[in-house]
Amino acid sequence: MFAHTCTVCSERYLIFPSQLTGVSPAEDGFVIGFECWCGAAQTEPAGRRTADHRAA
Ligand SMILES: [Zn+2]
Image 1 (cartoon, protein in one colour):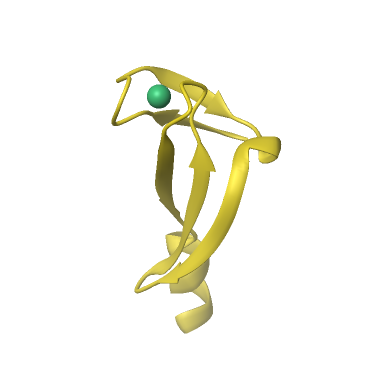
Image 2 (cartoon, helix red, strand yellow):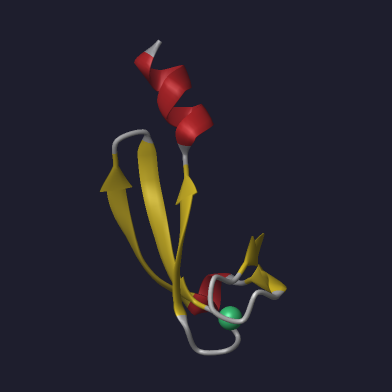
């Protein structure tokens, strides 16, 4: 669960695991895909800290 400001409705919501639609690899970790409470598809970068730690 994390907080996200939607790029469509501009509201800040808590995103729950049930809203997740997928996870994609990215240069600096991965990107979480999920659906906002308004129904818009959103993404949130994540895993940077973990990726840096593992790389080191
Ligand atoms: Zn939204």
